[in-house]
Image 1 (cartoon, rainbow, N blue to C red):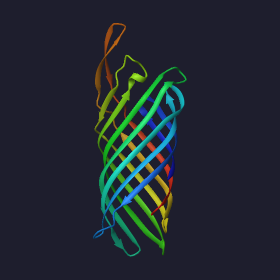
Image 2: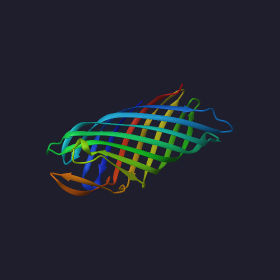
Image 3: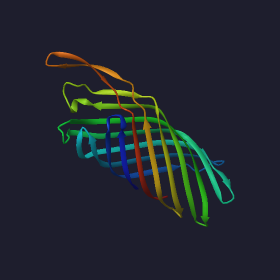
Image 4: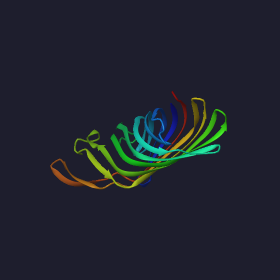
Amino acid sequence: MSGSYYHYKEPSIAVTEEGYKGGIDLVLTAPPRNDWFMQVDGRFAYGRNDYTGAGNKGGNPDWYTEFRGTLGKDFERDGYSFSPYSGIGFRYLFNDLRGQTSTGALGYRRESRYVYIPIGVTHRLRLESSAKLSTTLEFDYLVKGWQKSNLTDASTFLPDQTNKQHSGFGVRASMYYEKANWLFGPWFHYWRIDQSETTSTTVTVSGSTFRALIFEPKNRTVEIGVRLGYRF
């Protein structure tokens, strides 16, 4: 389980969301064969964000889930080891901004889906007979993203839109003190996603028809937390 501080920002339009999340993690690792290992892990985190942009709005539900599968190899040395790995990951985020902000602006639900390739390495340093310091660095290459904006929540004149995202990356780092079956320590996640493709749609208001261009702005997410875990 873990607790974290979450900060999302769209710099071009001065929109931010921030808050705290609680999370649950599950990791399944197949027994190594010839120092090769396979790992499947999942994470669910939930919290409530405070929005600042077109006014202010607090207590907005925000949650995400991730599933990853990786393959790696252990290289043992005297007193330490390092384990490079790679695989495939999927991230889904749901953000609910329905309702009015302090200036009367109407919000809507947003759904983000990322498919990415994690490339990382874990270094383990033996501290004593039953304790280790485990440090992981990882780069996440965005293969493709989809941003769904449920604009009908804000206005019946606006259709829901899905914008594809082709460029972006993530960075992860963690450092855990491991002893016996327990681990504890800090972690860091970062995402930077470039502006999406632009879609166009027809909007009709009071008999007049307009062409609207819709895109997801460039954005970045920072999440910093601590984790307490137990291995069965």
